Length: 113
Length: 111
Image 1 (cartoon, helix red, strand yellow):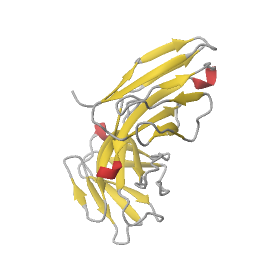
Image 2 (tube, chains in turn green, orange; image 1 turned 135 degrees about the vertical axis):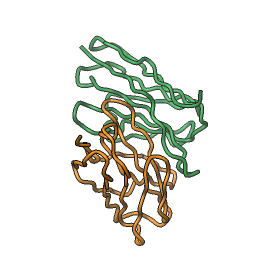
Image 3 (cartoon, rainbow over the protein chains, first blue to last red; image 1 turned 120 degrees about the vertical axis):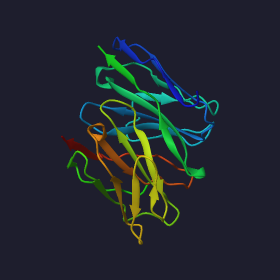
Image 4 (spheres, rainbow over the protein chains, first blue to last red; image 1 turned 45 degrees about the horizontal axis):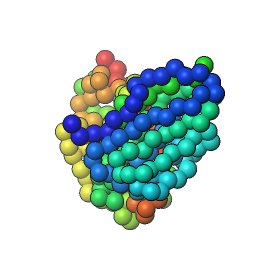
């Protein structure tokens, strides 16, 4: 089934631990994105990648890192989790250069305690 | 990305047409307007997009003004399931697509 997949669906993480959220798409989209969404707030861009091998910082990049080794995968890493990183994380991919819309994953609910 | 402005919230009666406005006065000539919605805590869902002409699909219609500085998303017969936050975005297609979302319009369909 074509689309974008995130893992895990949810996670409880102890503060100070390292965590990688996974995101994979099979649509061969050039661009991928990571967002966080806190209760009652909109989507805030953490990091993005316009093509494999390149990444960029969004609105709230501190405490997060990403890599884009290939077209399909765009993992988000929290090197040392803090409670303020408790949020729902959404991954998305798009190919706007071809006029195609973005598709979003189902989200990862992360709780840092 | 071109900045967009949307009302914070709107109500619409069930069965009526819901018209959601969006201003994007800094849009460039080859930038598309995209609409998404987010139902409860699900991932945003693509609805429709357009460049100059009006567009229609099975979900909605998109009306873009001639000067392209604003657009309106129309849900022709709103149902309770259309209650969601609706986002209008204009992503840059110059190789620097940050794809930022604003706060959107919270649409509530009233029974």
